[in-house]
Amino acid sequence: MINEKKFIYLMSTLALFFVILYIGMNYIISGKNINITNFFIMSFNIIFLLIISIILFSTIISYVVLKDKKVNKNIIKLNLKIVNIIYPFIIFISRLFKISKNEIRKVYVDLNNKYIYANKYNFKPEDIMLLTPHCIQKSFCKHKVTNDIENCKQCGKCNVGDLLKLKEKYNVKAYVATGGTLARRIIIENKPKAVIAIACERDLTSGIQDVSKLPVLGVFNKRPNGPCFNTEMDILEVEKAINFFLGGN
Ligand code: SF4
Image (cartoon, rainbow, N blue to C red; front, top):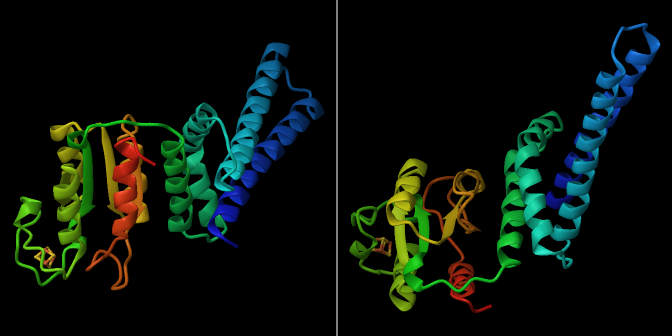
């Protein structure tokens, strides 16, 4: 099953769980002679029906968005907010079905990117930040690119040189961070208006959730040598993201 289908399947399962809970609770309340006020029963019914409707709404919108159908950007935004709230439940259910977290995170980042791409931006180059983890640098390289990416000698052995070229070509900001905490600090100190983050599914998901006030486009890194070691990126995807934030397509 491809990731999108699994994600929709998990959302539907969550809705089904609340339906079963709703029916079960109503059965218990009506079957036993429990002394509960009508107000309580009415509130209970309204809350549960609301939760079920919201999850079903989000399931349908997520399906349509992931299928690349045209959806109003405000609806996509609202859906992303709902997905953010129910995300921990989706992860919990994914564990029960033995679906890997990364598959779910991938779809979450896709939903986020689709929302960002549904908007129009026209930022100045200096307001755009490229942010990548340290594992993108070749392990044998001794140049301290985490202090300053300009220390890279552009030898062509890793994508740090390609990022530096993009920084020079477009005059955007570019940083190589040693971890999530430093990445957050770099964002706080530099106050960019948009971030293009290159990282694994886990770091992109937590990063996007942490800086929800900024538009963040996530680009998945490639890990031919395993996680966190000599990783790679699709530099064309990064360049496409820069052009998009600059107001192009
Ligand atoms: S491209 Fe830059 S960071 Fe990468 S190995 Fe060469 S000098 Fe080091």
